[in-house]
Length: 243
Image 1 (cartoon, helix red, strand yellow):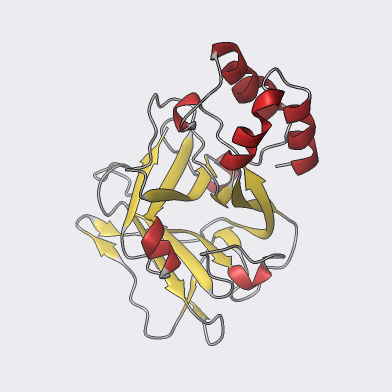
Image 2: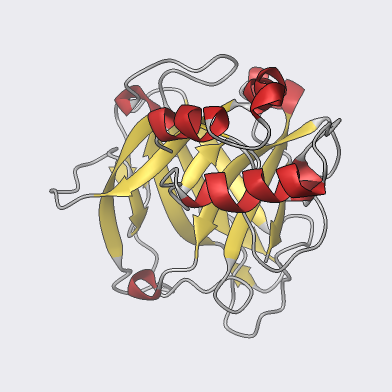
């Protein structure tokens, strides 16, 4: 998100008198940006083959193997983020089988592994996922604000001001639709997909035909984690939704 455009949008908007409220909504976020670069072991990427410790066992669900989606090397971050690991590798898997036995809102749909050290990781291929598509990425620290009315807590804005924030300002801040943290982004849901106020957004990914990703008919996959567990670097309990 372009922070300068966000600040300009707030000052020029119909809700400029609520500038302090809007600023209170700002959360740190990490943009996931596709780049043309060699994909090295333990580097951040979307798709492909995961890099994991030698003793790692490929996660399985009732109907088969989880599919690897992405990995993020947090040492690549340009700035540290409070209550978020400053080093290590986040590895994302989902229970996405051809017969769609798992629904993206089911418990256990997503598995997230955190490897404290990026050293001594090895590529781990799975014959059930031959020739997986992949792209290199870079991680860029930025900020995020809500993009839907139901995400606005204690909203003092009237209807016109809310629409001004959600539509006019958000259209001009160059929001990247693939990112870590921040707020969830979705297009078809009519509710806040976070399980409760004790949970926060961990990852938002848009559908991507180049990677054969299609969440909810071309929408967005969202993963959530309890705030306290995120502080503890405990990624064992992840909730998900799509829309």
